Image (cartoon, rainbow, N blue to C red; front, side):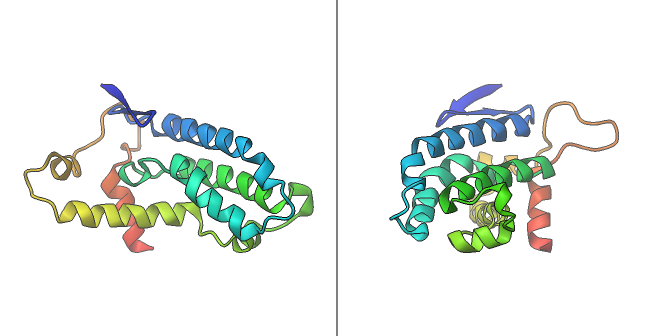
Length: 166
């Protein structure tokens, strides 16, 4: 079963990478439309990063707190974010600048840590709800779809334990 919410395809088949790839593509298109702002030399980097946090990051992380995190989805999010930071700061790969230094210059937390924090907040919200609510019941259900031969499908609660261990 598939349906669209806020122009994001939601399905029970567990194809998380496709959803994240679509969201990063949409966010990169929005960032491309804001290219005049990113290239503006008279605007302070802090202002540009605030625009990024307000306009682009919500698109890239839409429904991120409710899906399981995999290494591939983390890499997709971080790559898209760093491309945008390169535009914001005017840095390219030829400048040989470290990712953490660019993040510090933009005054923005790592997107994976930000999503993990939102997941933790979402779990706390769910734990306060009534036991009969569908969201609470669905929290511990197994994911649908095919799985690899040796590895079970990622579950949302599995990514939560990774947050608590960090």
